[in-house]
Image (cartoon, rainbow, N blue to C red; front, side, top):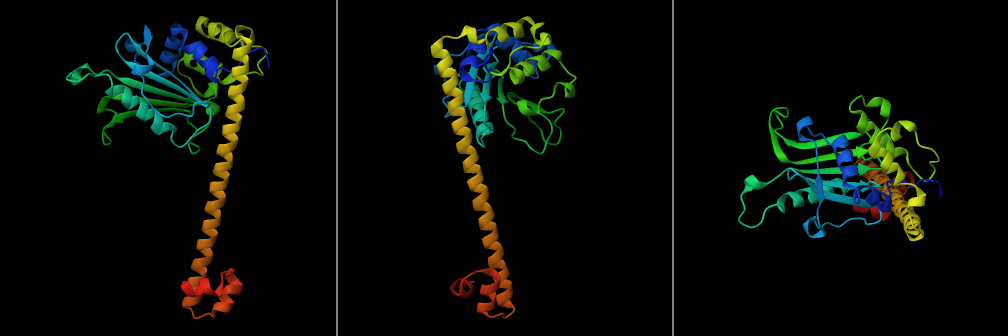
Length: 284
């Protein structure tokens, strides 16, 4: 194990962002599309009773839920391996948090916006080079003018992130570099990251010396579980592709056999060409 631990693991991510609200404030202000006059100033962490009850892959995802001084709710999820349900799960959790704001009989005017931030250490959109994906509810024919406020989702694909391609907020780039570059193989940290007090503090919270032996064992166990789950997901996807390919080949053979049969070609000849049995050919 190196001098630093990876902030994408559950124990490190939560030590940084669940125990130090000022670091989470800096992180959210940097990554979310908040207006200059709507920046987060203070937050309170939601209790488990206030958080959405949703099924998760406990070893490959960590989450933080909080509310700011304006009443807005923020859900932050760090996902190691992309799954097909991750986007729906974050939407579900964000929608639940939106609904749970009101007690029975309270007016809808009391509802505050809810933001869901999903940080992925994998790629889900392989057709688009963009790594920052912002979703909001808009009128399809007039998206710039008609916005229904309430739910917003942001997904960030860390593997696609390249600092030189993002000329916007400097703090955004530095926080993402922190998430992307720090790992167990890191021996030295770029001084540019350490120039920001909040990121410098976050770096210190990734140092191996800041963790007990039990925490280090949990850290190693986390990555062992992640590797195991990743292997299972890879095997499942490979099996699915193989089955799909086999099904496609079978359908192609059947279609060829139908065409040959329609032309009056004897079943024995069709069998030689397609490999289908005479009985299978007769059933077509």
